[in-house]
Amino acid sequence: MNNSAKASKSKTLIVPMIIIAVMFAVLGFAVGVNSFFVPFVQDAFNISKTMSYLVMTATFSAFVVFGVPSGMIIRKVGYKGGMVVAFLLMAIGFGLVGPAASLVSFPLFLVALFINGMGQTVLNGAVNPYITILGPEDGAAKRISVMGISNKLSLAGASLLLAVFMDLTDVNIADSITPFYVIAGVLVVMGILSYFAPLPDVKAAGEDDDDTRSETSHSSSSKTSIFQFPHLLLGSIALFMYVGVEVIALGSINDFAKFLELPSPENYVWFTSVAMVIGYIIGVLFIPKVISQSVALKICAILGVMITLSIVFVPVEISIYMVALLGFANSLMWPAIWPLAIADLGKFTKMGSSILVMGIVGGAVLPLIFGFIAETFTHQTGYWVALPSYLFILYFALYGHKIRKGE
Image (cartoon, rainbow, N blue to C red; front, side, top):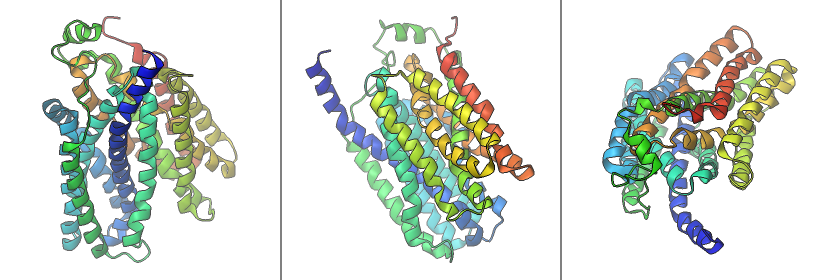
């Protein structure tokens, strides 16, 4: 392809990428809402600190329970149709926050978050493979890195926006009714706009039923089950590990700062977030021209191992800044794992994406283990849980993504 053709191709991707970036921002906002709610619900519903973490459980459990059904939905209505369904489910979820607040019903509130999680499951299963196959395969991590910047900025912005309506120092549950009805309305509008959005109908290599000649089509047509793709299953485990360590890095640093009695401990999460954005920018600049997706994943996994060991062994007053550096190590993992895990799935691409989405539940499991170790011993000791996670991700980067049945 000559330079003018490449330039033309890049221009045609700009509008779809902007639209998908908005959808990644919605996903970031939804996660940011959860983080904001954890301390809010303790006073709002008069529950314990432990019970408040059911906010995370309600959302993340949807990724497991609704993972396979989401794949079936996307396979039936396509990536674009899946985005529409996702926005409508999220609108219902956020809309139910109002009645839950009016009735002061924590169980209804958890149901609302679970439905919202169902929407997030479908949206993740649609937008991640879509952006992966929207352009050249070797540049997928670059495109996902752009999406990551949008996602993380929106995640941080969610708390700032909600703080305008809800005051954590003087909790009034009625304050949550109006803003969430507004959010639900915005999501309905976004669902309608998604239906009419100028998004090209894209399919992975070998995914089209008419494609009978490509190598990918020939390979996938001989398979009868999604479980016949070892690299996908290993990728799902790698994603489980990654989301777990990402949530630990983002979710524990404020608590660590509070434990160390540092000034303004609530702001330390910005160190981790900024480190992630810097990593995303590097991915945009250097993938695939300088480094490949697999090499980027290897480098990040090695950094994860080294930084984790530093966190555990350096003096505690320095250790917290090493936690912030985990954001940099984590940055290119999601962008690289996705394209490597769904490569060569052909007609199984949509269902394979739903299997990967189920791995997001790692964000609920590994932080609980971290919390138990940190409470039983010390914060520094708790970060040992990240070491086997980074080692497995390194294995996937080196060997796991290459494994194919019969090879």
